[in-house]
Length: 225
Image 1 (spheres, rainbow, N blue to C red):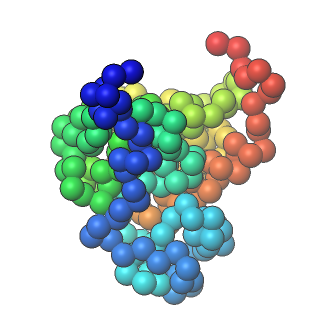
Image 2 (image 1 turned 180 degrees about the vertical axis):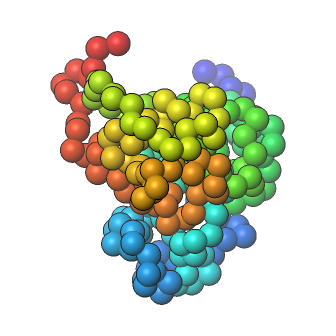
């Protein structure tokens, strides 16, 4: 390798450092706003593992909506995604992969990592857009299928009262999430697909997904293609 090429070839680790400008994370402080949240124990467990972080000191804001960027950061943390072994001829930028991204935003590194781990995000991703329950569920299942070998199971579709509200193409991901216990219907049998997903619900689904993967490891040699 000549000197010019050697200078151009840089490691991802050297290029990127964890930077969350514009958000104040405080994983060491217990969340003070989970008293009436059913998923409190799951959220606390994820916080202790560094998967989720608070906003502004000891607040988790469980009922706040989650943006695409925040969801992607959850995926990166939960599935321990990185680009440590990759080499780039120029410093990667979030806009290399997602035209609507901001290269100076706190989420830029997470988007670069997600893109290079191929977790199925659309090229027209809007990082600041609130994710709906169906969008988050679909992208979570995509991430799991890309990064983990889910066991081959025969899904018996369940009756969902508001199935007519689903976006075309998301129903398969939702049915799989329901079948393996990552997501659940409400007491009326609704999934509420178009509602913004809350930070608490997103965290609970991440927790359930990690538990399912832990309980169903891929067999030696992986699953057949």
